[in-house]
Length: 104
Image 1: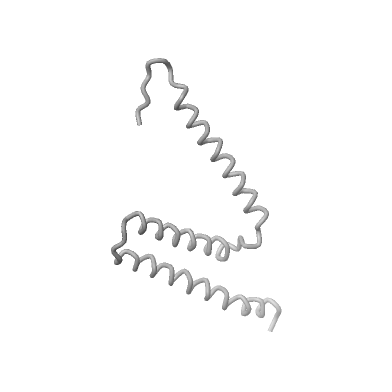
Image 2: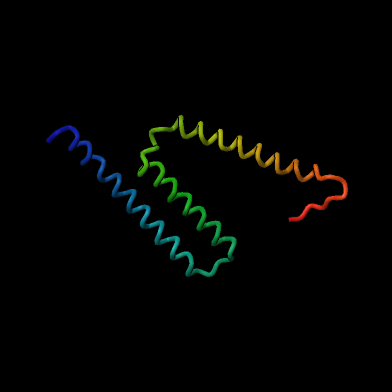
């Protein structure tokens, strides 16, 4: 048995666990639709489950768990750009010409 084969065999339980977690979270999100909570609660829980599933896929299936510095750099840059974009949109609301109306 080569070193590569032993590395692969060592990784199999981890990926089976990720698969089980994703399948369980899928069943939980589908099962959530059968309970009679308020719509905001259902939407919040469904979004939290979807974020957790997305994080599992991104970290393990796409092998980005080892790229922490790059991921955080891109995340911070995206957050800064989003802030400035929202600031521009917010500022444009107050810079309408005289007599113009804001239509939403």
